[in-house]
Length: 73
Image (cartoon, rainbow, N blue to C red; front, side, top):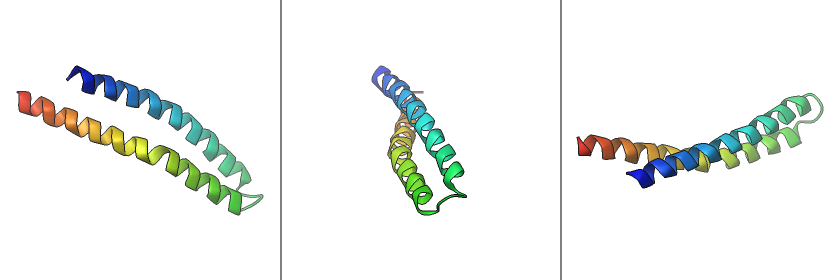
């Protein structure tokens, strides 16, 4: 159980770091929206590629934690 909590905490830190990167990319995307279309799409795709695997892993860990706590009750 402690290992799962540590993993969730670690994932939270990773997601926080990734979210800040995504926000920067999103701001760049918004600023480039009027100038040029292609790089903005590229930025958006890259940002999604960055965040999605971590989000999916985080959700899986959360699901395992919920199942673990309900089974132990």
